Amino acid sequence: MNPSGPLSDRDLGLLESSLLPSLERHHLRLLAHCLRCLQEIAGRGHGPMPVSVAIEAWMAHEPRFQSDPGFAPVFLEQLLSGAAQLERLAAELGCDPLTLELTQLVAWAEGQAQERLNGAPLTRDPA
Image 1 (spheres, rainbow, N blue to C red):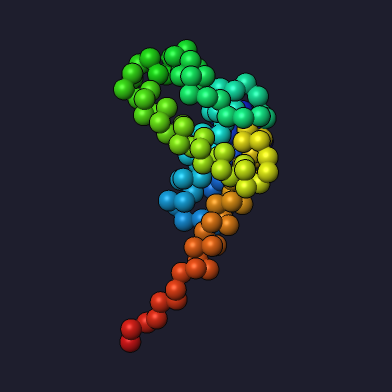
Image 2 (image 1 turned 135 degrees about the vertical axis):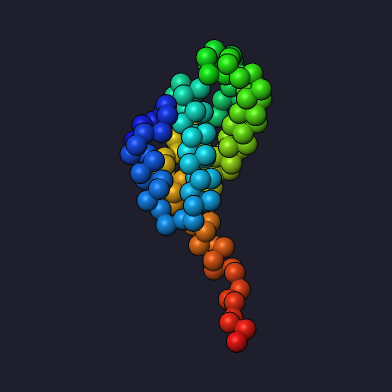
């Protein structure tokens, strides 16, 4: 798997191969994209997440944010939210956030879905 940079076709295939509902797969893709961006910003595949200042500095040098300045604050907010979620997951797994792999994200998402299913009351047919 690609340790940084955009999600590859192989990465996307892995994410799409899960049996998760489409909304949960979409969330998983967003989380994976956050991970890849944060790894790229940090310039490494290990250690702590980059801080907000480092993310903003990276964004200031990315041409894609120059053409739509209104997008930058929204992207930053979403990236920080994703970073927080990835940090919680890494803490659960006992690893550095930037060392997370997509297989771990998929396993986590599937585990979350299974927990919801196990905790959901059975519905009965009213007839």
